Image 1: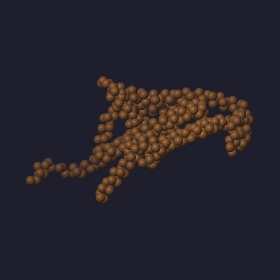
Image 2: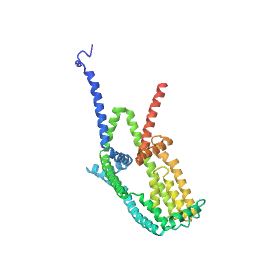
Image 3: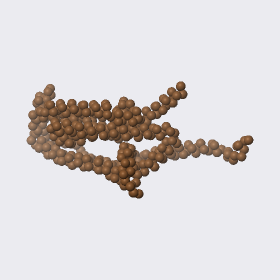
Image 4: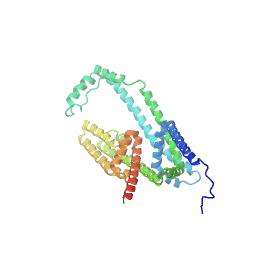
Length: 366
């Protein structure tokens, strides 16, 4: 029996109409996506930071959500965690701003005195090997003489635009506004993260099939591993080197430790700080302490960069260390600090696709 005999007749041309309609919908969707990205392009960094923080802190959010009871936990838990993250970032920023303002006032007064009285040659300058004598002569000719110092510092002042302070203030206000949008977005990601993840999984299944969900999971694992590998390990480096700064008798060891922990997030950033600290100690006459700080810093960074970070960042998604390093450095160059976390995520997606395609090709060959 012909099962299609009783089927309703398909209107002529319906199959031809579906293809143009499908194309039109795709073009309209692409145009709307591009328009939306253009409208939000100034806030994409804030949205991306919110996504990175939400992925990194999601296990902590689930524990907090489980510890709270009542109908308001869906609002209270995201609010508590979001405010906590805001305090974690704002308190050090305020402390740094106060310290910078205090040091800037001292530095400005120092420059004013230098323009009128000159800057005497420090005792450690002649002791520098190789460059001590010529540097001392240059210092006496350009900085020790009050007239030469006033002329040199006047040229430096002339190159600094009068509106620089206003420009810096405007940039700080802009960054604070973006940070506020990041926290607001983070709150909604915590509150509606489960529903959003289900929709994203459904969309990936529709567009890419089961492979899309695996790629998404690998990217999230890469972001989580990068946060643990960069931020937590960087904080650990700051703590260990901070102890070394205290033992070596370095002035302001806590500030140096905080700066070390922050720059340790960036590859090869920590050596800049403990190298400068070692130079300061050597210039002050503490050669043994300088050598100890530098050697200890090299050992800590070597262990962290070659053993701990590759395991934390690449271990979750079996990402080779070379691609971890390339993702971090390339992401940093392309997207700034945000690229530290986006780069490994993109590399994880590429490696996942590579493995899927090569495994499928080997299966067909066999």
